[in-house]
Every structure is written in C-alpha cells, then in structure tokens.
Image (cartoon, rainbow, N blue to C red; front, side, top):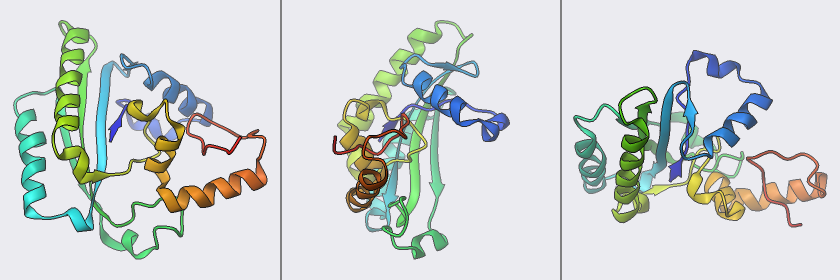
Length: 195
C-alpha cells in the first residue's frame, strides 16, 4: 500500500507524541521535506499463502530490477515470520501476524540535489504507476499504522481497515464507541467512530 514516510535518524525513537502528530501532518504533503529529503514510500505485507516463487519473481522484476542503478529508489524486503505468527491475529490490534515479509519501495531525493522537486515528482509518478498497474498491489496486504497512507487519507474506513483488518476494526470500534463515544481522544491515526 502507498505510504508517505519521513527519512529519520537515530533521534526518531525519542519523538514525543506532539512531534509524531506534527510529523504525520507534515508527511501528508506530497512534497514533504524532512531531514533534508523529499520522501514517499509504498509498502505492504506478503502473507504466508502468497509467498511462492512466482510471486517473488514478480516482486523482484517489478521492484528490484527497476530500481537498480538509481540511488534515489530504495527497495526493502524485510523478513518477518517467527513467533509473531503464533499469536492469533485478533488477539491484538495488529492483524498482519501471518505476514512473512514486509515489502516496499521508497523514493528519497536529497532536497539540495539538482532539480530535486522535478526528479522527485517523476520518480513518484513512475513508482506509483508500477505499484498500481502491476500485480504488486494485489500481492500485498494491509499496512503499518506507523505510516500515513496518502492514497487512503480521504477514506478513514479504508485506512482503518488496511491498518487493523476487518475483524480487529469491528472490535476496536466497539471499544472506541463504548469508552469515547464523543471522540474526545483522537489523533491523525484514529479509529473511526460511528458518529
């Protein structure tokens, strides 16, 4: 799924809550400048049932081969698996426990490089087209709540479903409606209420 992310440094682990919300609002601007880079990323989870050689060949062909030789395109395929999958997906808010890999690609253009905005826009268009027009998007599920997703920002229901899954979202909405029906406690990454 498409996300906007910020190029962070080791200081990122010490962000306060207010800084995270500020970062989120800042990252929603498609031309966000953060830590000296224009950044945009796409990400999703490759689930156990979809992990086979044919699908890996698609991911390698569409992401890895197309990004080779371009220092502004970074592909990330992080192994998950392990004990995280032993926990029932509905036992916590995070439903993507059966994912074997987190797969993504990031555009990172140094703000001080020549024609940075032009290069950034062209790369975003190129990656967005490959991500949407190929089978990549259909192979990957969900999203990390930690990342704002530009393509889902106008539809809180789609955003919440991608973050928490259908079953978990129902449970989280019930909790939210029971304990905070007026939505007093909210943030940019909120559980939609039934208001």
